Image (cartoon, rainbow, N blue to C red; front, side, top):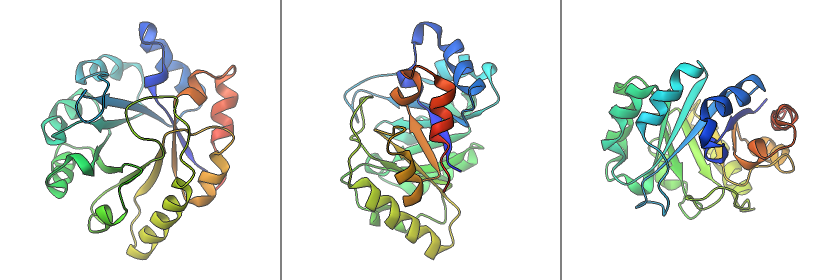
Length: 216
């Protein structure tokens, strides 16, 4: 069954503690935290201090997605703030293997994100060193975008690559995930579904998360 990671990018930041508690009590597996620097992507979101402030709210997995230039400079602060998983964009890292090592040395699981236009070959030599591969199914930087259909084939190819390599890395899909396409994503090989609007804008959050828990 797929795991569900609601993105707090779509939450009401005026009551973030309540918004985090709401999705966890509704059955979410991870809390997805989008970090944007205004350089790698156009928007600026939040920093480690916000993560630290919500860490006491839950013992659920904090899945921190660094959409930043020079991700190696942010690892220590987010690890200390309470991140469990730290993912970074291969497009933003000059030495991705070194970044992976730094994340693991900080006590977190490490993952690599691939933008829609980035080929799987960019992660091929690293898949036995990482715990997660994030397929961006929209261009990063904004919530509420529509799913890019070609992402399904990319997920399937990545699944085959991981199986061939004997890797146990999770495949996370981020962008445009809805209750209408989640079953296709699960069949293609997705393990974790990031959902912002599909959860936080749903009339019934419990039912939305239940629907996103798809059989694989």
